[in-house]
Length: 636
Image: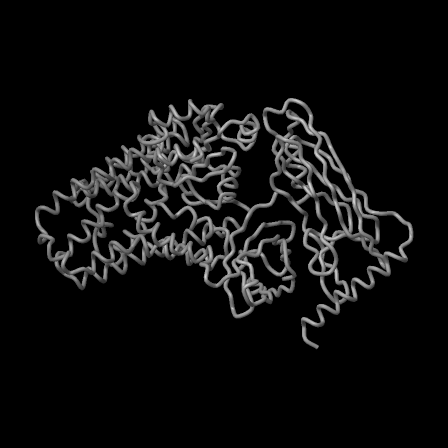
């Protein structure tokens, strides 16, 4: 018998049994439905299902009847998102269906117009199919509840959402079509205890592979196939909302993230945080003169240093996240010891370029290890910046599998290394360079100044993270270490032992004072009225106010550039005043789990991120312009 004929026979058999049960149904306890409004922005439709019976989910799975809620709303009240708890699988007539068999609540968000001053009544007509061991009876109920402004309790709201598995978030997954099957790659940590519940259709036969973390299902062919398949992915006690690509002619989000990562890596070279390191690249090219073969060899080492560092970052971030901690791009800049180390490293490189001391293997040289180290340093220096396209790519990387993350970070590294690689392998460019000579020494001294400026920037970041006392200790330690390396450069090779003793004493003392600065941890206070929190956003929206949220950090140079050239501009300030825009600052300078989760909810894992609530949510570009803000606020 053909599969289609069996399907029709199954549906006919089910309807015959249903009709029989309706005729022979006896009296008994039935499902009870109620409607509550615990907060002003959330209502609950609660189903109390008798023992031994079940009703169906919003998608019945092909056998049964889906539960439906028809809302009747007064003027001034609109619906938001609905959260249905994950159902249970039930085999009915040799076919799987999706059911509830115990008490549960559908959480429905609502929005009340601030102009409404009196309580309003919300009504809902609920229909369902209630089945027991031998009977199935259609159910219907009309419920209502009064809602009013001012009955807001964010803590209660969060508890209700969490209790009903409604505090879920979206998850970007990589998909691939293989004939009539869809293969979906799950994040690491999602093993054989995962299930998928589609919001529509009967695509329920998922097969898991524990070793490859993939799942697949049979797909229908033809024009009737939808472009997307949305539903719930349940992994243990975690619920994710996912949207899967079902069309092979549409690029998957993961594929596009590889493209964005590659472009972001190229642009990252021109960001202000990486620019000082370009001096090392210029010296490297100049040192080889017209030796094309040597230039090509060293460019490979440099590129490998960049890619290897990105791979290490990906592994560290995934390893830490597997322990339950949330990390994002530039996470290392949130730790004062790392910022202090960066300050010392760049200061020593600047002193080396100024000729204060010389080492046997300088980062500016193009020997194999030196070129590799230069690539590592370039990636480390890029931590305070994110380039356009990087935010989305990194968001996908850290919500996908480890292999997908490594692929995205590889594209980021290849993009970052590409300009240098192309220049190093272009003979016409090398032929235009003058031969090595006195001019290189002058260039070394000149290019040390941008590195010194970078040190001033790092000290400012350290001051904002650890406080003034720690910053003072840091600078004293730098002074002692600078004096030590000056003695090393001038007198270390003399026959007298005293320069070596003085060098060792100053170096140890400098490192000791330098280390003392790590123990101070005094985050600088920010204006309380402008400090971001989800509650402040929610309260402002309830007042009908536009909200602008600036997710940034003091160590993020892109953030500082946008703030000084755009956000603090006279036109933007007038616009905010004219439209009564509430400006909130989500400061990610130091580690903050709540801000990290908020960034991830927008598919991002780093700053800057700019969000405008009108109340429609609008995400602005990472490199801001005044035009972007004007259009978002004015709703153009």
